[in-house]
Length: 242
Image 1 (cartoon, rainbow, N blue to C red):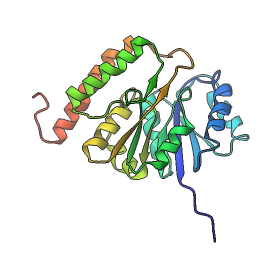
Image 2: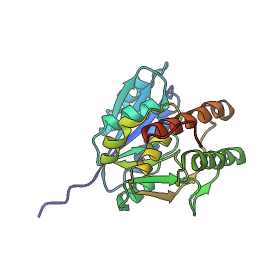
Image 3: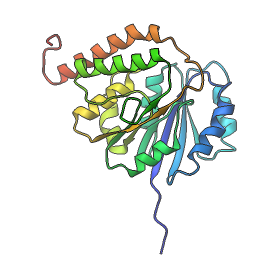
Image 4: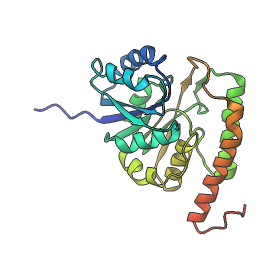
């Protein structure tokens, strides 16, 4: 009797100028993934780095055969996630950050019958150890999603997993890049009727943030409004009506 074929998971990690952090992060990442009962491929979506991030990943491939590299010319987190998702072939496509990942989350994904699994910082049982300001920002953003986009999920930023059919169906429709690709992806999947499950996440910052929270606010608000306008236009509604 032959052994069952393990499920396949493609992990996409967008990175930009992470040459100093990768030597520490990659061993920790692959150690965390070692016990996941699946065939896991890690795709580093390097976007617009000006240091030797890409060269470091290429050198690391000798130690980690399941490590892949996608090089993109422009620094854009959301575009890197989109192109990474579309580049992968696993039954599940998963988004991690280089400083935020969890093999336990992948175990939850494999046990789920949902189409989209979100690691929520706000779900019951979550342990969010970030600063008060960042927790407040997450809560505020969630309220915006509820009132502006009518979303029922509690967290669109962070670890997430999507079945291949969701990626193939929804990702090409997404117009947002930068900070809001994943938000629009999840909202579109929600509106399309895909089953979404949220599991509680442990969130503990391993280092300081690389971008200013306050500087992202105007861009995020404008981006959410663009998503609203696009979705309403696609549904034949007047984008300017409430």
